[in-house]
Length: 352
Image (cartoon, rainbow, N blue to C red; front, top):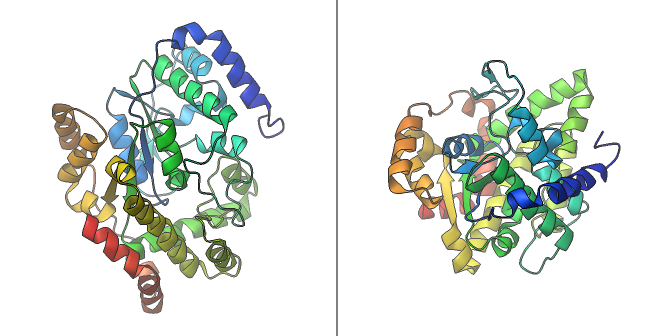
């Protein structure tokens, strides 16, 4: 429905806001937390871990496709009889089991609606303090307020991989925001992306609707609809896109890795205020030292010390390193990935 009538979602969202204005009047948006980074870097684990705290409201699987009216839909859901939620491993086949209540990334739908040509590799996707989009900003803040109010929470939590290109813009909108950037050893990361890419490509061949669905929700990191993300270097972005189109998938993902995290490092180096709002979480350390890594992440996110320790202790036992990625790349491919990513990876390692 929303694909056929692109303006319908915004119209319904605005209608809902007018109807519940009194209910959300006293709901501020303070200290939102944004989890971002390339897909397959551990961002879902971080999102789920943070979402255990009652302080946060975040989107969940059940919010789709009625994302545009979070207050009405969640108000109705809370009053409908619900069957027992049985966790099932998600489509990625990565040991993460979810239900309709599990937190998920859906706000990219809003960004794509208000900012034209999102994910076009020809167009610089960076949004900074010079960008102004009054319609989006009003809708986005009201959307967040409605979600917080109906979930009876205090703060907003979101996972959005592409928010690495919007750090400065988001900090302008929310000066007390906190960012958690998930990063992974590039060899393991590229291997994981290649595995997911092949998996979703195969499914798309069996059902072409899968690719269309991924594109409609802004899930273009891998699979049949994958696009290079332009972070200010259009020539490099088109080079990555050519890699994807020509079947040089490993090189394409390695270049995207270097470009994405190189961009984050440049942002940190150029802006002390932004740097203090960002915590880089390495997946290898998250897996080898889960309790310590999570506790530091929760504290950065603004949770009080006791709750940070409690949640970290409760979650740490469920986190461990996967064992099925490294062997998928040949020796030559591993060398190529390392050559492309080493400079950025070493810089990240020094900051971790």
